[in-house]
Length: 198
Length: 432
Ligand SMILES: Cc1ncc(C[n+]2csc(CCOP(=O)(O)OP(=O)(O)O)c2C)c(N)n1
Ligand code: SF4
Image (cartoon, rainbow over the protein chains, first blue to last red):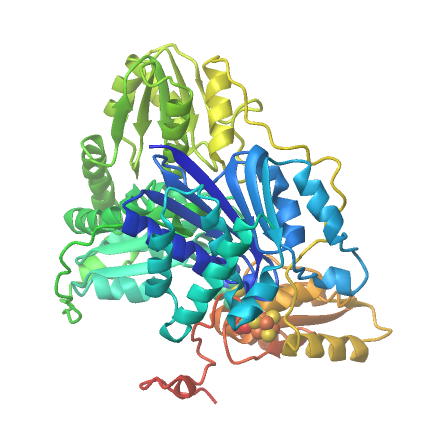
């Protein structure tokens, strides 16, 4: 069996850990071995949350620099920061709606232009999908569904050894009952947007 | 640890869980509990944190096993952590000693599928049979207890020799000795480098006492050995000593400027590269894309939440202290973040409770105004004893107790200052 290494980067509160759990559940449904690890030090206080998910025949639960097959970024500047995890064949999917840190708010740091971020990533990778996932999440009914929108886009690329259906099934099992329909809508919106190549 | 010691000596299976630095606080009871031993199984889980993702140091708690003279088990995966926990209880009961299950962040923050067995009925009431000449550790008693501890350690060594947790995989004359997560990285690396038929891996899961015979036999079949372990050269030094006893001559390396560091954590790519270097295999590392020409990406340091009560307190204290020459000892919790500019309140911190006792020292040793900060949970944990001494000794400092009624930093665990009725829990008292 092949090995696929996925890194998800987000800032605290964007629902990265739930997204990872959904993928884990889908792997269980599909009988695919999976190892997941996450670091969320101080996530509540606006820090970075990173998950590594290794599908297939590997033992390690973390992913070294340059060794991600897919990078899924929930925040554009965080996607850019995680470029050291990518090699030239890595597929990159990112949300384009920024979440500036307080360092930007107090004028200590400057947030790069979104167009610049897009270009910098595009120059460095084989396949790049970028879109405003927050807008789609709102369209689905709640900005909190941004994580599921991004999962939809991820599944469209067909890079994981999981079927679209298994992830939809996992959403039904892993997300709160009252949000299932909204989440499935969010998933579709993400999937379709990635299909259009955006 | 004392609560667990009493429960285990009343015949109950008991587990005591803490992060690596927690074992420092619990070390005093642990050292002598090893003398006394246990009746019901007692498993201590130590969560070590190589790289210090959320800790003040990255000490290697395997040495606590050596220091106390008790067994250590170390899982390499989530699945194994579950299985070893069962095995640790059995081992503890067999030897009548507490057993440490030593994990690291990458085990604790990982998920994987596990198979659940049948859950046994829990025994939650035991009985304590008095036997003061066994349980009251005056010197005359402890002198005999230490003899017993050493005998137990010998028994433990025999068990380590045949333990299912010390495993050898692969074949060939290149030897790798590893533990914990390094085993996963080594397995993946050996496969990636296609050296399965040249390399033998000894994975140590029962790491105190180590199995001398097993290690000597392993070494006899190797032309060179690489020891892969995060943290300190715990196994490496022991392996070298065993090999010397056998009068074998072969290169053994681990911690070395061109190989592994005592610093931080390892990762699969790094372990692959070091294995390739050491055994002189051609290897092209997978290169990251060029990130040199990227613009500066805004930092995202953790920050106090907007509206956090700590911030307002810091602000007022700074205002009140305006014009004074101050030292601000701080403590461990969300409020530690106050050390960052622009607040900049936080000048010294070593462990939970240190705000209070270091204030005693600074107020004695300097002429500056000492103002220190401590959270409610940390105050009850280990600030209160320092304060009692400070009052007795008339130390001159101002202590600000940041009572937000919870243990915020680590996820809102109850502490003795919390009103549990607010969370609909019965059976607790309110400290007033
Ligand atoms: C010996 C030890 N045990 C546990 C911890 C983990 N720890 C970090 S902060 C904290 C408690 C913080 O609570 P509190 O003092 O109430 O401050 P708050 O976060 O609520 O502001 C704990 C237990 C530690 N650092 N050291
Ligand atoms: S105590 Fe911690 S979690 Fe609570 S508001 Fe302050 S920074 Fe946030």
